[in-house]
Length: 252
Ligand code: ABF
Image 1 (cartoon, protein in one colour):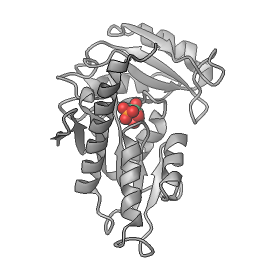
Image 2 (image 1 turned 60 degrees about the vertical axis):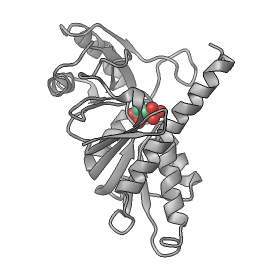
Image 3 (image 1 turned 90 degrees about the vertical axis):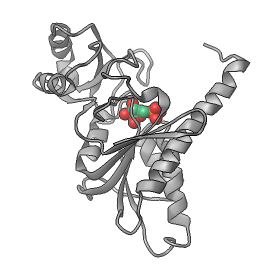
Image 4 (image 1 turned 90 degrees about the horizontal axis):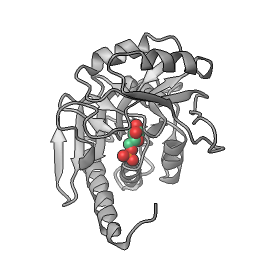
């Protein structure tokens, strides 16, 4: 689909919304004296998180005195960490993270999330489960009016081991709330399944409005071959939503 000239101002506003959310989230939550190990998530909003933390690292206050260690959730965030002059660490070296910032596909009123639209859900969940504070940064479109599954129709990403994909797909399609489920296509060759950083496949499953995300997550995790789901339950401590007019909404 080609972009119309009239779409460009909206895209710029959306970008501004992501930037204000990310900058505000870092400014209000990141404390370089306490937060030495920092999780940096994936997606387009977290780009501005890495930029802001890079600015802190380069500031008079921290330059040459303190080095933040940044833990990535995938290849893109690894590149972000490096390109912003930050020190790259790994979750194997630092299994306890002080604070982490990441985007989301949907956020409900209880701060339960759908993540994994970018395909990094396992590592994102590993980092978000290993951190003391998990701050979500997003634009206004990601806030669900009430239930997850309301805003977007992509559904819940589910990471599965390749050999089990057909079995898991059949099990998910047999669930009473499943509207549809497909293996995500468009990997490197564009003709086959997307392969994650962990060499797994992703199934995108649409369950319509999700009234009990915890139960759905548990049911999915019970299926043999499911490695992780994109339902992030009780992980987030705060969410920052940037609006097109530059204002911010914070959910606690
Ligand atoms: C990652 O990036 C994913 O979990 C989520 O799917 C996505 C959000 O991206 P963006 O910030 O581009 O909306 O955090």
